[in-house]
Length: 205
View 1 (tube, helix red, strand yellow):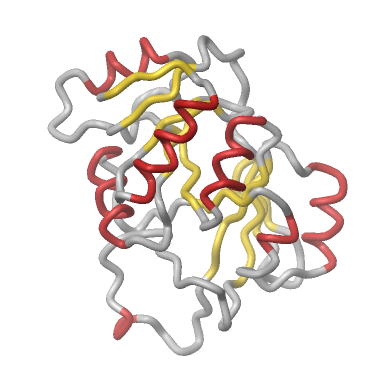
View 2 (cartoon, helix red, strand yellow; view 1 turned 120 degrees about the vertical axis):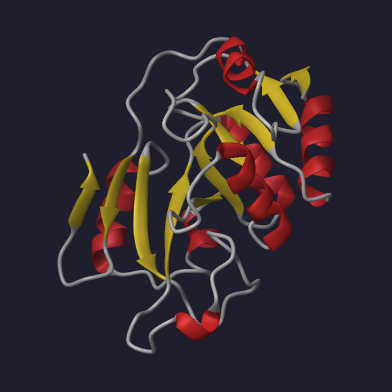
């Protein structure tokens, strides 16, 4: 695990790591989060292995702006209302994935297309961060990156690099690069609201 202080130079190192299919841990407006290139299925598989996350639990995508997110999901009036009130900020909106996306993205690994029901549309959780570093990474990488808490599945969300190093010290798979922004204030996880149906469904308050 490489640890670099958050700086313009380390952001360049993070962009290079993402381009090589590696994982990057960085600060968000809630806790430290995991980023990988969602257009790279090998990178996504590596993220799930490091996090020890079940493959049927998709991760959300981080975008630099609502305008960029709209290129990947079918926007609707409910999402627009939530975005105007709460974004950028700790809110995940789940929407139907567009059929004509700029890049194919993988929010989970090892999903066989043949098992997808024709009646079940693919969805994507989208995030627009209010954290300046997270936004800069998403903007400069110019491809959707993952956003999920940087803990091992089932362990507490980390708010400092010390917590991250402690969690992963004996893990078989470890993060590639950590950008150290110091200790973050304790915040609740983002709200998750499903806007794919006829009404909003709160999945995490």
